[in-house]
Image (tube, rainbow, N blue to C red; front, side, top):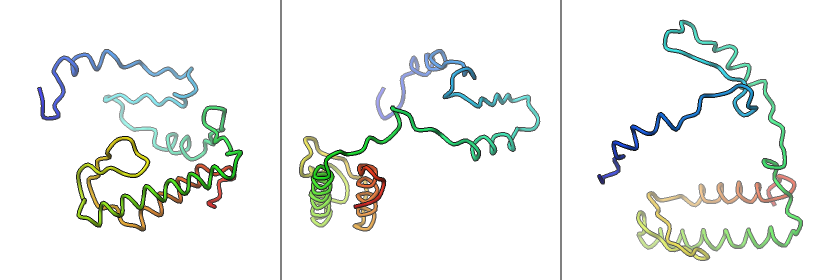
Length: 137
Protein backbone atom coordinates (compact mmCIF):
# COMPACT_ATOMS: atom_id res chain seq x y z
CA UNK A 1 0.00 0.00 0.00
CA UNK A 2 0.88 3.66 0.05
CA UNK A 3 0.47 6.51 2.44
CA UNK A 4 3.51 5.66 4.58
CA UNK A 5 2.14 2.34 5.83
CA UNK A 6 4.30 -0.78 5.88
CA UNK A 7 3.17 -3.88 4.07
CA UNK A 8 1.84 -6.64 6.35
CA UNK A 9 4.54 -9.10 5.24
CA UNK A 10 7.26 -6.68 6.36
CA UNK A 11 5.75 -6.42 9.84
CA UNK A 12 5.47 -10.22 10.03
CA UNK A 13 9.11 -10.71 8.97
CA UNK A 14 10.54 -8.02 11.25
CA UNK A 15 10.65 -10.04 14.53
CA UNK A 16 12.54 -12.83 12.74
CA UNK A 17 15.28 -10.43 11.72
CA UNK A 18 16.18 -9.37 15.26
CA UNK A 19 19.16 -11.02 16.86
CA UNK A 20 19.15 -11.97 20.51
CA UNK A 21 21.63 -9.74 22.41
CA UNK A 22 24.84 -11.43 23.48
CA UNK A 23 26.88 -9.96 26.34
CA UNK A 24 30.04 -11.45 24.86
CA UNK A 25 29.88 -8.73 22.20
CA UNK A 26 31.54 -5.59 23.54
CA UNK A 27 28.95 -3.34 21.88
CA UNK A 28 26.21 -5.06 23.86
CA UNK A 29 27.88 -4.68 27.24
CA UNK A 30 26.69 -4.17 29.80
CA UNK A 31 23.59 -6.16 28.93
CA UNK A 32 20.53 -5.64 31.11
CA UNK A 33 17.83 -8.23 30.52
CA UNK A 34 14.40 -6.92 31.49
CA UNK A 35 11.29 -9.09 31.28
CA UNK A 36 7.66 -8.07 31.80
CA UNK A 37 7.42 -10.32 34.86
CA UNK A 38 10.40 -8.64 36.54
CA UNK A 39 9.39 -6.55 39.50
CA UNK A 40 12.00 -3.88 40.12
CA UNK A 41 14.19 -2.60 37.34
CA UNK A 42 17.95 -2.19 38.00
CA UNK A 43 17.89 1.60 37.63
CA UNK A 44 20.97 2.16 39.79
CA UNK A 45 23.03 -0.35 37.80
CA UNK A 46 21.90 1.17 34.50
CA UNK A 47 22.69 4.72 35.67
CA UNK A 48 26.13 3.62 36.92
CA UNK A 49 26.86 1.90 33.61
CA UNK A 50 25.88 5.00 31.63
CA UNK A 51 27.65 7.54 33.83
CA UNK A 52 30.73 5.57 34.76
CA UNK A 53 31.67 4.20 31.37
CA UNK A 54 34.23 6.09 29.34
CA UNK A 55 34.35 5.07 25.72
CA UNK A 56 37.76 4.70 24.17
CA UNK A 57 38.30 6.03 20.69
CA UNK A 58 39.59 3.50 18.23
CA UNK A 59 40.47 3.62 14.55
CA UNK A 60 36.81 3.42 13.53
CA UNK A 61 35.53 6.13 15.87
CA UNK A 62 38.41 8.57 16.31
CA UNK A 63 38.39 11.76 14.27
CA UNK A 64 41.23 11.74 11.82
CA UNK A 65 43.04 15.08 11.87
CA UNK A 66 42.90 17.20 8.77
CA UNK A 67 46.46 17.42 7.58
CA UNK A 68 45.97 20.41 5.33
CA UNK A 69 44.75 23.57 7.07
CA UNK A 70 43.81 24.90 3.65
CA UNK A 71 41.25 22.08 3.41
CA UNK A 72 39.56 23.34 6.58
CA UNK A 73 39.33 26.80 5.02
CA UNK A 74 37.85 25.29 1.84
CA UNK A 75 35.25 23.36 3.86
CA UNK A 76 34.37 26.54 5.76
CA UNK A 77 33.93 28.44 2.48
CA UNK A 78 31.79 25.67 0.97
CA UNK A 79 29.52 25.53 4.03
CA UNK A 80 29.19 29.33 3.97
CA UNK A 81 28.17 29.19 0.30
CA UNK A 82 25.58 26.50 0.98
CA UNK A 83 24.14 28.41 3.94
CA UNK A 84 23.98 31.61 1.84
CA UNK A 85 21.94 29.66 -0.72
CA UNK A 86 19.64 28.42 2.02
CA UNK A 87 19.21 31.95 3.36
CA UNK A 88 18.40 33.22 -0.15
CA UNK A 89 15.82 30.44 -0.69
CA UNK A 90 14.16 31.21 2.63
CA UNK A 91 14.17 34.95 1.90
CA UNK A 92 12.35 34.26 -1.37
CA UNK A 93 9.54 32.53 0.51
CA UNK A 94 10.92 29.02 0.14
CA UNK A 95 9.95 28.01 3.65
CA UNK A 96 9.14 24.42 2.82
CA UNK A 97 9.66 22.11 -0.08
CA UNK A 98 12.51 21.28 -2.41
CA UNK A 99 15.42 23.69 -2.46
CA UNK A 100 18.46 23.46 -4.72
CA UNK A 101 21.52 24.67 -2.86
CA UNK A 102 24.94 25.64 -4.21
CA UNK A 103 27.42 22.75 -4.54
CA UNK A 104 24.62 20.20 -4.12
CA UNK A 105 23.86 17.80 -6.93
CA UNK A 106 20.36 17.01 -5.65
CA UNK A 107 17.58 19.16 -4.28
CA UNK A 108 17.09 19.14 -0.51
CA UNK A 109 13.73 18.96 1.26
CA UNK A 110 13.36 21.75 3.81
CA UNK A 111 10.40 21.46 6.16
CA UNK A 112 10.83 24.59 8.26
CA UNK A 113 12.59 27.92 8.37
CA UNK A 114 16.06 27.49 9.82
CA UNK A 115 17.03 30.72 11.60
CA UNK A 116 20.44 32.21 10.86
CA UNK A 117 21.55 31.68 14.47
CA UNK A 118 20.79 27.97 14.23
CA UNK A 119 22.61 27.81 10.88
CA UNK A 120 25.68 29.40 12.45
CA UNK A 121 25.58 26.96 15.36
CA UNK A 122 25.36 23.96 13.03
CA UNK A 123 28.19 25.35 10.89
CA UNK A 124 30.38 25.92 13.96
CA UNK A 125 29.72 22.36 15.17
CA UNK A 126 30.49 20.90 11.75
CA UNK A 127 33.74 22.85 11.42
CA UNK A 128 34.71 21.82 14.96
CA UNK A 129 34.23 18.16 14.04
CA UNK A 130 36.27 18.67 10.87
CA UNK A 131 39.13 20.43 12.65
CA UNK A 132 42.10 18.40 13.86
CA UNK A 133 42.33 19.85 17.35
CA UNK A 134 38.60 19.98 18.22
CA UNK A 135 38.66 23.78 18.47
CA UNK A 136 36.52 25.92 16.24
CA UNK A 137 38.68 28.00 13.87
